[in-house]
Image 1: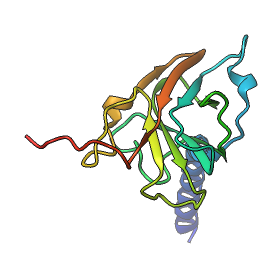
Image 2: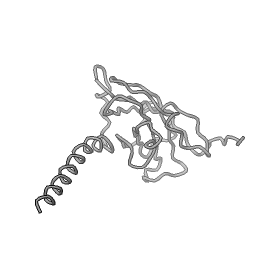
Image 3: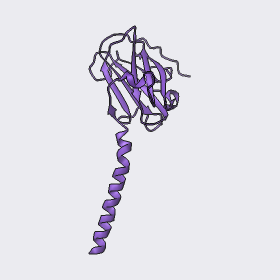
Length: 175
């Protein structure tokens, strides 16, 4: 009986250890944060990405900026984002700026979505863009992690994202 209790205790302790190790990883993912530009300002330490978004076709709805690990398994996968900023659209001079702090240096991808009508659902009028501004088409609306990956160091990395909208997009010929 003592042997069974000892085994159960060892399994419980191992389970606790695994849980304790997993918590920091999970806490680094899926944090909704406010857009605090002070974290990307002069003298700010990183790692962080200052994202300048331009190309808004309307000053309505909401804009969402999400950071993902730049890996094939995580990029644009549901629930795999690290930090998310979701705010009403309020472009000044046709642009909006966002500061996305990150948990560590490394390779990341930034995805931006303009929900023009604020419905919370993707629609044909909505726009989007990605770090490195890869070319998009109706047949290829989701670029690969490799095309969007940016290297984020210990400071603040500045990028520009230009929004694209489905309406008016040109279709690239196949072949």
